[in-house]
Length: 404
Image (cartoon, rainbow, N blue to C red):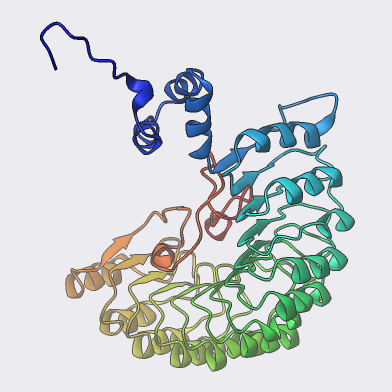
């Protein structure tokens, strides 16, 4: 270049790949908005990087959510994760817009969308949809039948607080969504368990505060042989409640369990615990808090057979005695944490002896109420909704109910 000659190159000459790299490093929302406001080209570049869309109930327009959604998806054409959490006025027509404008959708959160009906769910023709959350929705078996046909790639589904869903709807899902791995039916009181008899791919089931029956749950465990995580805590006091027969089926059929939460299952007895301990030898975390029916024989079985156990919860187990704690002290060779308080039959001397002989075990008097039940973080699970800290189950108080 001759001396004094000015370079005619500007930032407009940068290839689009370079602009994408620059835009991808903008973590601040104001910076991203400024970038997109520069010119149409930069707007197009920034829009192509938006993969999540979170419509709040605060967004209001005279033409409804369908109009807002269409405008947003015309701009953000790469979006594949959408959350409508709390949009109670979201109508079925908006889902129709979603199907036409966002065929590549992977995750959809419809938590507390009370205006969505079974007919609206019938318009969800997403062959690529992997995760769907229907927390506190008015969905019934008919809606689940639509989903089973329209979303064959579904791997995760949240049906917490769906009071109209029964085993018939669950069974329909098992026939159509053959790859389902994660499901929550917490507080869905009409499900007894038999609908899970064909869920061969399921590895995680959250069924706390449910009305599962012995017969129905026995069929479920026979069909869900790959389960790695099972939450049956806080059973409701009603005519349908798991008893020793239902709990025994866990040990007979769920050989791959790593995390089992049976907190507040007072019907659990020594025979059922022994069957679980013998059959589920891959268990790494076991929550038996407030299981008052377990006596010395049950604790001996846990100590002798749960050789892979790393975390054990015995909080408020009022039948745990010094002898039972001695069995735990001499067994469970890989134990790392023991959560124990409110056990009136265990003396301070017995606790000190436990600490002396098992100095590598952390004895915790205060149970930590985390989102994950310990080692569940090692099991594969999909990501949570955009701009949400609740995890994959959307607005449900995810994993916390097991410890409250």
